[in-house]
Image 1 (cartoon, helix red, strand yellow):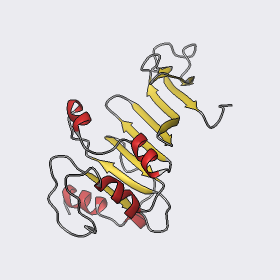
Image 2 (spheres, helix red, strand yellow; image 1 turned 45 degrees about the horizontal axis):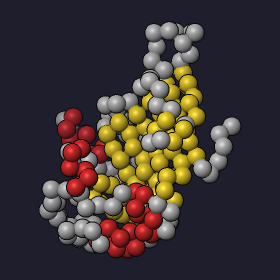
Image 3 (cartoon, helix red, strand yellow; image 1 turned 90 degrees about the vertical axis):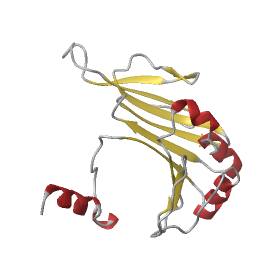
Length: 183
């Protein structure tokens, strides 16, 4: 078996056999929405040009911009993956509602999780009632980001400490919340 076959076999193994992290060399964003999939699909369909339901196992043609939503059996949260190939100057023109808009329309919490190995950032944002209520941002020494989106965040230098190795890149975390106070 050549390396391509081994890689394909590894990538295609059942979800029930997967544990841990396969690979972090990517940029991704997902949204978790605490509603049944049909309710999320209805909210997304209201502004979509076209929708397809029940496509698991079917071949479909994707339009130039798309989103994919699903729900794992037995879980209260639906998962939404947006097309990340949309160029930044066209994001505002896409018809998909933002996480804040979804939380407002559905009256339920929406969590957005993002990771970028390119910019060295991992973050989450929690939206409730159409407003951000909590966020976390971890970065590889991206400078002072203590006022993200106009919200004053608590800054934590996680490692390494500059007095130990002044040349090392700092791992910095920022946290802000309406819901809880950091300790």
